[in-house]
Structures are given as structure tokens and as C-alpha cells.
Amino acid sequence: MTNKSSVWGIAGPVIKTRVDFSVSMYEVVNVGPQGLLGEVIRIRENVVDIQIYESPDGLLVGDPVYFTGKLLSVELAPGLLGSVLVGIGRPLRTLGSDGAFLERGKTLSSVNQERKWKFIPAISEGARVSPGDVLGVVKECPAIDNLITLPPNHPGGILSYVATEGDYSVSDTIAICDGEPIPMCQRWDVRRARPIAKRLPLSSPLVTGQRVLDTLFPLAQGGAAVLPGGFGTGKTVTQQSIAKWCNADVIVYIGCGERGNEMTEVLEEFPTLMDPYRDSPLMDRMVLIANTSNMPVAAREASVYLGMTVAEYYRDMGLNVAIMADSTSRWAEALREIGGRLEEMPGEEGYPAYLGTRLAEYYERAGKASLLGSPSREGSITVINAVSPAGGDFSEPVTQASLRLSGVFWALDKSLAQQRHFPSINWNQSYSLYDKELEGYYLKTSPDWGDLKMFIRERLSSEKALKNLVQLVGRDGLSERDKWTLAFVEIIKSVYLQQNAFDPADASSSIAVQACLLRCMRDLDLAVLDLIGDGCGFDVISKKPMIKDLLSLRGLGVEDLQDKFSRWLELLTDDLKSSVVVISDASV
Image 1 (tube, rainbow, N blue to C red):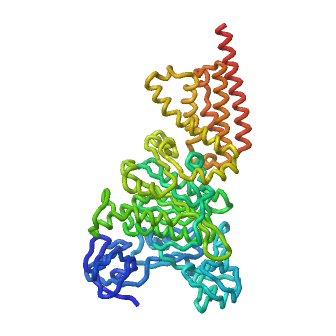
Image 2 (image 1 turned 120 degrees about the vertical axis):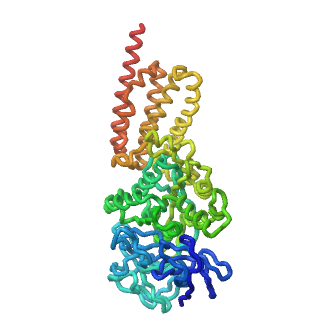
């Protein structure tokens, strides 16, 4: 039954109404003659505050307010993959089909209710089922089998009916359990985490294809990463590169309060990309949630919960899901704006005092888990959140609260971005807490991975001390070995740490290629140090175009890379040795 009241006060997207009936927190309401979607966010005696997820333009005091008795939820069913949703779960393409602007108050399902899907039963009539048990399979796309399960909030029981193999819409009944019809479509409250059997330790990495991330600061599948950086440091391009090349089964990408042109680029580019791991379009395993900066602020706050609920739906099928929000700073700004309209006591920098709690509720829904139901399966949700601190100040509240909840910190550096060094990850500030958990995986891929990683870290860490020494004694005051070390760090930066997201050959590197390229770097260092020990001066070495030659090799596969590098290094050392001989003869 729907209860009705009327608008009593309006403050932007927050309205007030008086009620004489029971109301629950986060209850969904419809406001005004257009039925604008809203949600209860505060109850004080008989006064209820409601935030509207659509533009409140034209609302008047006295307009009707209808309380639905339900919480904000989303429909989960085959057909979500490849879709583009707004922050409250409505399909963007359908909403915008009648013009440039979205129609207010238009209620649409998240999935196509008319489309038929081929359902293949996986269980028989008369079987006893529990929450999460697989009832059948739908081939949602060539890459993904959508497991149709008994909803996790269903008590379970005996199946009196199971549909035969055939084509059904998501609203058709595919099973009957204890007299209750079960369709393919599930509805789930976005603010409520879907249950799991138990949490599991993290053991495998989310391979991003970005060398600086996978080598120095790896992220585990089921882990959480924060990507903070000021304007122009490359947060969006880095997240988009990870979305294109990471080894997750499903990608959920949330444009949370970002500029419209950036989201347009995603919407135009991603459908044209091919999946690097499967012979199918990349969009087949993606869900895009678009909530740009000119869309209602309240819907921005809901968009991250929507994205997480979609991620949990696919995780429950035993898939590895990566969810990316760009950016949580805009989400926090929405909380701050709504909190101001509610006249809440502000916390640090005006953010609400519960900012850390809300972020924790979101991050804690990530992880690797053993899932409900039979057959047994495991899935994971990996979180990668961009943060946009004002002026690049990492001490601001959103960045600090995110750091406390995540295991990886990928710090973007403005100075590196200005030098056109991308990804502009600061290797001195960034860190990963997953090194130990992932050590076994990397050692299986490359037995010398630990030594290679230690080698590159030692060389990068030596740069700062040597630069300080240069300021005291000048570059000419350094030993030949130290001069080479400084030059070699520049080679590492240009050849290994830098990556061209727009070059198909260099946009992504597998772990095997990364290990091979690291070995090449180490072999080059050892060879040059031996030559310096034999009397070769750095002035001679510095004249060789090493960076240019190595850049032409890094897009090759493992075998070609190792072969061509070995021949190149042999020619280089022979050339330098001959130079040493010539210099020796001249001195005699």
C-alpha cells in the first residue's frame, strides 16, 4: 500500500514533508506530478527529509509525495553486461532516445524485459535447494555464462517446477520453490551487501598490464587500490587502461561526477575495443555507470552502491570482478552538499563526520569469497578508486580515509605528468601491502621475480642519494659507476616505467614480458659495469643511443625480445670494448 503526503519545504534536491504514518530510512518515494525518484535520508518525529535523485526544478510546496515502502534497488538479470546505466540504475541509451536530455520521472527497468534468453536447466524438479544454488545457465555473451541462482534472500525449499530448455524473458518463471515463482531477474537493495559463505585469503594478482603497477605495487584480486592525483595527472587514462587490459572477468566502470567529455570518450571508445583475452568486444564483459558532473548530485551518491551491487551479482557466479570509480572525491562532495542542506554538523573540510564510515561500508564489500550455494565456487571483487584531492594534497580527508581502507596506494605525481611521463606513478610515495600474499604466484611465473624486483627497486632508490651528491660535488665529481647508475635510472624510467596507452604494442605487458624486460635491464647494467671496471669511461658509454634502441624492443614478445636484446647487447659491448682498446692505444 502506498502512503501519501505533500511537499512542505524545498532545499535544492532535499525536500521536507510531514507524515502521520510509519516511514523507514532509505525508503523510496515518488515526488510531484512527474513522480521524481527520491529516498528518505532523515526522520525527525513526523518530519521526513527526502533527497531526490533527479532535478527538482518545478517542484512546488504542496506537491504530492508517495511513499512506496521499498528501498532503492536494482534489477539483476542477464542483459546487464554491455549496458550503460545512470546512477540510479536506469538505462541511459533508452532514457536519452527522445532527445539530448534525460526525461525526468521516467521509470525504466535496468534490463530489457522483452528480450529472450536461452535457459538451460541445471537441476531437476523435486530437488531441495538452498540460497545461491544454481538453477540453470544462460549464455549472456560468448565470454560469460550467467548462472541463474536461487536468490540469496530466499529461504529455499523443494522445487515443484523447473523450466525446460528454451527461450525465456527475464520476468518469466523458470522455477517454483515451495509455491513461490522464481524468475531469472532478481531485485536487490543497493545499500545492502549480498551474503557470502566466507571470506578467503588473497592469493592471485589483478594483472593490469601496466609495468610500474604489476612490478612494484601489485594489486591482489579481491584487494582495494586508491589512485589519488591532482588535475591533469592521468587518473582517468590510467583507470581506463586498467579497465581495457586487466585480467578480470567482468569490469564495472563508474563515472562518478566526472566531466561529460571524459565519460563521452568512454562511451564512444569502449564499444569499439576488442577484448585482449577473448575474441569478442570488450563491452561484452563491462557495465558502465554514467553520472556526470551536470547530473543530479544525489544520484552521484547512489551510483557507487549501484556499481557495487552489480559487481556482487557477477561475483556470486564465481567470477573475478573489477570495479572502478572515477572519482570518490566527487561522491564525497555529494555527501557534503547534502549534509549541508540537512544542516548537519560538518567535520574536517566540511565533509560529514560519517565520511569514513560510508567509505568503509563500500570498501568492505570488496574481497575474495567462497559463495553461497551449490556447486561450490569462488569469486572476487577488486576495487580501484580514483581520488581527486584539491591541489594534489594527499593529506585531505577523502584520500586519508581511503588509504586506511585500501591495501595499495598508487600516488600520481604532477611533476612526472608535466614531464609527459605516464603512468605518472610516484615510485617513492606509492606502496602495496599485498607483496607477501602474491609472492607465490609471481615466483611460479618467473622463479627470479623477487631478485628482479629487488634489483629495480635498489636502482630507483639510489637515484635520490646520488642527486643529492651531485648538488654538493657536481656531476663531474661522481665516480664512473655512479655516473652510469644515474644514467641507468633514466633508462629504467623511459624504457620500463613509462608506457604509451595509445600504442597497441606497448599499452599492455604480460607478467612474462615484464620479467623478460627486467632481465634485459639487469644484463645491460651488469655488462656496462664490467666495461667500466675494464677502463671504459662513462663519456664513451653516454654517446650510445641506448634508450632509443631499447624503446624499439619493448613491444616484442618474450622470445623475440630476448633474442634481439641479446644480439643488441653483444654489438654494444663489442663496440664499447673496441673504444677502450683505441683509447688505450692512443694513450700509449
